[in-house]
Amino acid sequence: MTEADQQAVNRVYANLGKAIAAYERRLVGAGSPFDRFAAALSRGEPDPATQLSLSAQRGLKLFLGDGGCRSCHHGPLLSDGEF
Image (cartoon, one colour):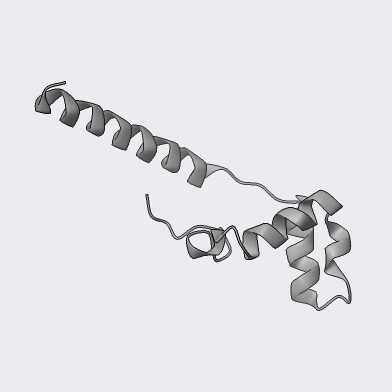
């Protein structure tokens, strides 16, 4: 592949990623089990994890622990806003 073709492919993938990110920022969701968990946690309820299924609890443990997801996915939108 020529260098010009490589640059064109890279540009297409970068623009595709930016378009997906722009679309995802427009999505509005509320009322998910994780939203209920976060609300219960912020209210100081004694066992907010009851808002999550056992599978979701395992996923949250992975997200917070060995998965290292928090390094990029943090804050109220679970995003660092970067591409």
